[in-house]
Length: 279
Image 1 (cartoon, one colour):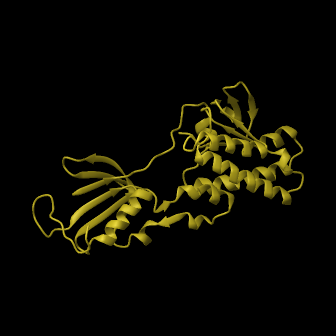
Image 2 (cartoon, rainbow, N blue to C red; image 1 turned 90 degrees about the horizontal axis):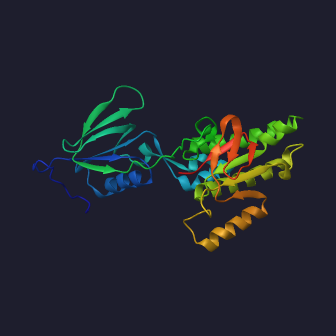
Image 3 (tube, helix red, strand yellow; image 1 turned 60 degrees about the vertical axis):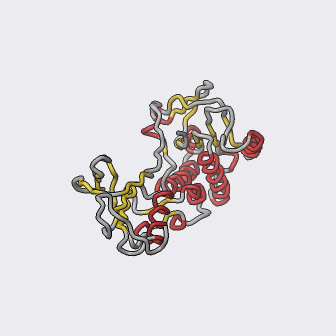
């Protein structure tokens, strides 16, 4: 599209701004709106973006944000600041009537309303698939948003404090056991970054040594990180094992009720930290 070009609306009337509606303000949605905002002349189109969050999260940096290697503000991009010539609606599209070229928007607060469009761009992204595993919904911690990443960082540090403040061996062992389910990029990098952070933090916490912690990575497939080669996947497992991380391949989480972790290989143990990065 050339700068300064104009459009004809779908009803054949020329010179009317085209109503472009973008569903989703993630990486694809934000850059689609940003590209249109730069390429189209003012008045050529009305660009509207609908997104429940007011910012775009660069998810590959979430592990670094959780470990404190990157400032949280460097992981998110305020949509309204970047998309100055677009209308950003905080809400979710709950219904699309494509024949009528209309969507239903449910705002964060208030009643739902309809909004018409001429062109629709669907890029709502994905959500974590929560399997019907007993105790997972109550005890699992997600890893899709900056809020979850920061919560996980604070949670891990609080578990170290708890272990240093109790003489109960069972409570101490439970506090220092960290379980990650899902051996993709997100799970492996999140666990590695947080284990490194916790290892460093033990220098300043009395009565807690790196050897006191137990980190368990549970993966249902026969290898981790299916996005890379088998050789690189095996190399990564070797490096994790060198850091005393327990990598369980061909293993599924069967239950997590009451913090009691039950694995498909028959092992059971208690853990106050369960991170769900699968699905």
